[in-house]
Length: 267
Image (cartoon, rainbow, N blue to C red; front, side):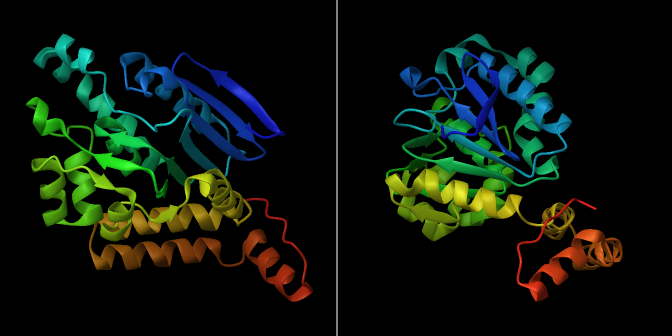
């Protein structure tokens, strides 16, 4: 972490900090390859609650300490749960990973090393995925007698298409960061030593844009992805009606002509 970072929450598996108006979630159990446990789920939920209550945030970054992003779910956990546990908890767990899309602010995943199973489902729910060249991706649930159940079959299919999704999920293929970039699983590919800088550069750029415009843009893209062309165009009309004439829109135009840095207030 750099200077200027304020630690907000520190759990056994995850830390959460703020750098100005950027929230930074860090998987922080490298000795276990940041595996996903019940404690992990609980801490992630608490951090999401903190993020939702903080109206000063403009963007969230998800990263990891240690050589790997995450090796996925703790297989010991899978031995302990049964169908009753799934009926009681899976809807909540699905929303946990889908909540990144419900948030009005963008969420960036910054991935290195292994990103397996449950961890891959988590980044599929993010808005932008940046990975280093040493990253490896796999969604191997079928190998263990399961199918991805926290959004993997839905979001991976939307992201990379039916054929690639079937190949990765049914075939349990592990792919490199280069191949993940080629098929559209990740948006940006960088060298390992550039990962943090590139991630924070994008986060800071987004954080300095008009927040209302960013929020409407994220929602508009989601609407376009999940509904008809007519519905998407109707949403564009509604958001444009709201945004035109706002203080931030006028500030952005004035700052451009006055050759100065704009100051956006979310109004």
